Image 1 (cartoon, rainbow, N blue to C red):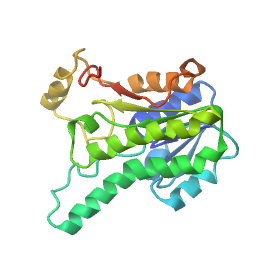
Image 2 (image 1 turned 30 degrees about the vertical axis):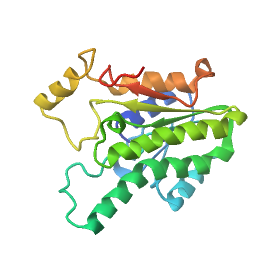
Image 3 (image 1 turned 90 degrees about the vertical axis):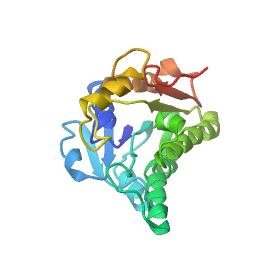
Image 4 (image 1 turned 90 degrees about the horizontal axis):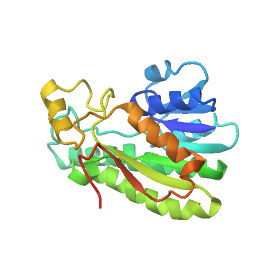
Length: 234
């Protein structure tokens, strides 16, 4: 079975549909029941919050056997569309919500599923280009996810389990920004790439399917930047 958190929308949904079309058994999770209701045939949908122990237990109740792959797309930037915090309490709440949604959800999901992962299984965590640009608390939270993947790869490697992080830049046709971007803003983001193109969910699908496949058997502990050259490594 393949588990896709945040599988009701955007990149997670695209990955879940691609796995289903390959004939895989797929389970998706998400906090909102409405997007999960449109999962379609062949996909098990579980409404739960992967950032809470009760949520991951609920997910685990629907996993009948072994796990061949985990794709953790759950997360997001709760600061988008909100006013800046106006008190220490509000600042602390925003920080905790951001870390919980991104890092805590990854750690709890892995902790719940790791005992069921088969030799040769693959874990794909999703980071963000924001980790390189220091975007509010979201950037540091995603940097922590990428760092977590490194230690997790070392811990699960002796069992033959690979762990990698995919860090996208701007990907169109998702709900990340809470609504469609202005044409001007989208053009600005596209201009930051070396390819002068906007990323699409299918770009993340192609990379994720490779990381899940036996062809990536010697690739682990890496943070793979998927941004058209908007941020480069060397």
